[in-house]
Length: 289
View 1 (tube, rainbow, N blue to C red):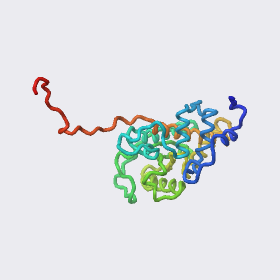
View 2 (cartoon, helix red, strand yellow):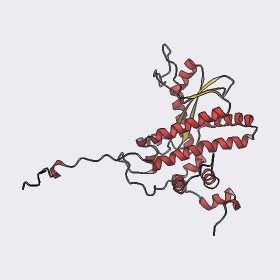
View 3 (cartoon, rainbow, N blue to C red):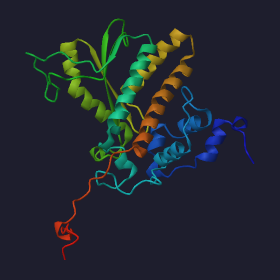
View 4 (cartoon, rainbow, N blue to C red):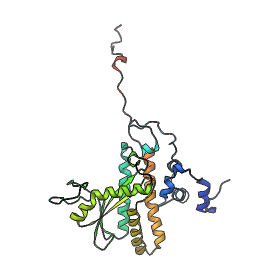
């Protein structure tokens, strides 16, 4: 029998579709992108109604439960095993950059909707000529951050933001045992790289925006979401709780879509080994014996 989605609450659907995950695949639960987001998207659609198709929804389940990708080649074009963890960190095809840049653009769009001024992406930083910066600071002449805007935290004040999306099971995160620790570590890396330069030379504030591929946000990202929600709710005369929920879904859905694209996206052809010269028939004249 066909069951209408209108006759069931989201919680009832969640109970049917989401059995309790085992402890070793609990990343999505920790980051809060699992049941609430996927069920909402599949049944109700999301921002501008970009519902997932059947394969995308199945891939979302694969991500949540850390299962093997179905109907995918066993080997990536780079030669590594085609696991979910590898697909989300492999640089082939440009999907790591796609995930980062898409999230950067969504954040810039939200700032414009919040009434922030002078919003633009990839602003070039001023030169560090004659300024002593701490060890680890980025002193490159062509250094850039991801987003610049005014009136985010305080009126007319310039604020700079840099985005990072990390994958928790990546080898670089193995020393850290928990998702919150990973968020803090990546935030501190960004601050060591940019904070002193931006405070001393740009005379602006700096905020690292850290997300995980499973949808979790760092402390600084949470603070930004709350600030933007406060501004947008005031401009549109909407409830703060509805607005902050909308922004979180918007960001997490964008992460979900770009993550799924990385799983199925074309990465080019695998490099082929040249044939052994000894196995080739080099007698090109058919008349010769």
